[in-house]
Length: 326
Image (cartoon, rainbow, N blue to C red; front, side, top):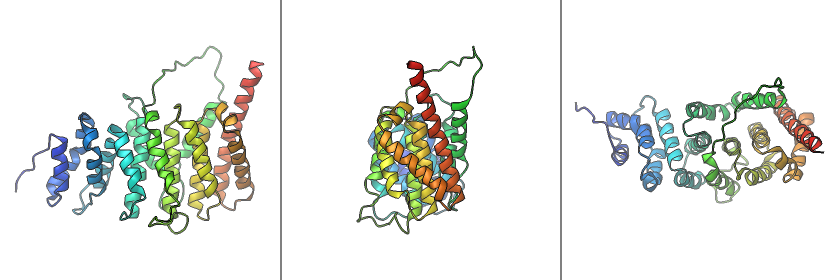
């Protein structure tokens, strides 16, 4: 028995992950991969795509403890440290042949988690919380949307209606959203080919689970782009995309679409929603009202009502601002 030596360099780690015949070596190397990526960002952009490919295709042949979690964290770290290179590769691979369902879902989950981390201040202690949030935001295999996103919406509704006592002030520290510069790289390619005839899977039919996860991920990404210049155009494209799938036969897809609508309302400034995107927003409002009144699914009704409450709050706030200016 030979003791496995811990790798000190990223390229050494990459080579070790390619040679997966020894379970002890694989476990050791995978266990330090995330830390090496985060501690050594210099020069990472040159090898980020290759490293991402290695991790994406890495299989758990030895049933290692924490394999899924360690691989996921390593992929997220790569996407955070080299967002343009990794997002370009992952989004291009999402629609390619020779990937199974699990790998496509992995791609979406990594992109969503990385987007959330990039949207946080560099020194924020919330990065791990954001990583956990990505799991909460994603739909479960059973098809029921989880409670994580509802908590976000609930808190935002409360924040929009809360009344603070006079004299109470809260210092706001302006921080740059790092995700703004790369948001488009994560967002637009995922929508580009969803209905392409050449696809080896059909998201509008039997592979609707992938479509549901895709829509959830787009919602997560646009929420990460809050307070960026990119969010307006992203919202416009997402609303157009959701309009196509709003009557999908799979309830999971409809739930995902309603979640994404709430993320648009939460992410885009009210004056932009009601001015630049007025037509799209009014169409969306009528759709939400129709879901509330006619959809046979109770959960869909709840989600539609939640989004309508958010939208009504935005309208009231903007009306109040306008009245105060006159």
